[in-house]
Length: 400
Image 1 (cartoon, helix red, strand yellow):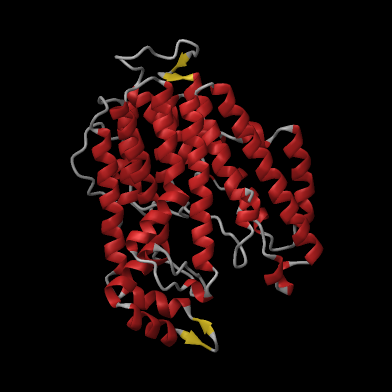
Image 2 (cartoon, rainbow, N blue to C red; image 1 turned 30 degrees about the vertical axis):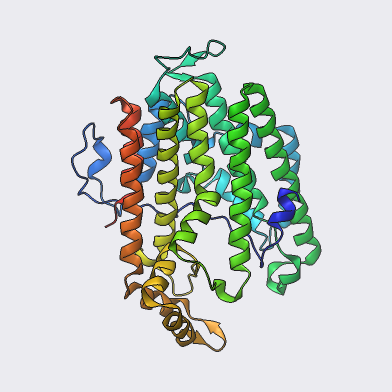
């Protein structure tokens, strides 16, 4: 079964996830050296995250904010973009995905590629094994590692596009005409496949079988993770019978952590680092991605201004932890009490969850994974790149 076919097995929309609308900051940052001037900014500052990324991009000497733009603006996808205009006026999620790719820098969709470049520079060339003799090094990063960062972003972008596929049997009249939504699905599949094809071609050009194996397994993990998410989401109101925090962590790693973790490991393989360094890079990517996802899950519960109509996934980390503390029976009772006229009152349920232990436990879990990521960096020599990687962790694990 192909990737688009798997992604079509969804309840209604396969919403993009894993990228927070805002990241939060606290002035109590601990005692870490090489602190940038932005560190003292308030968590409420809308510009601080962009400044974190901007300073990191200067370190790697590469504007990663539009890393996959070269592929996105190719002749083939430019023709597709012209067709996407036909979807204007509908509720097809592909429009939101495309808009986010080219406009919403606040979401920083290119974070994965930036992390790959930073960890490549932080590790540097191998001092034991022979370095990449077939590739040039610019700003402390091999050209093959830069190609890997772009490939990582292409895979991630392809998945975002593929997840903008609509289950046509669940359409409502307000979503738009059926023929337009069907056309949008075709465009999402075609453009996502095009990005994946370019990623596969780039992998082949690296001429490293282990790197190909790592990225192929990451793509497999992504499909498995999205399938699990869709399976649990297919039930009414995203309520499942068996998901606990351990299951949640396993599924989240597949759908949100595997690509970054294995890309970081692949970057070390390209520089001929040994297995220990590769494992540390893998651990950083894994735990950073987990912290990032939990931060995203927490946003509906910690934002100062949240609309009463704002929904949240009932299989997100705070909700899963809340359910574990509460017990299945009481959780079902709370769900029932939050129903009004057959629909779930998310504002009421949000306040109920905030009054429990789920939110604070999710914050602790976010910081736990952040500390694990920082621990993995201890094996890398002190440098600006390592400090930038630490700064990214601080940005997703500090809450006001």
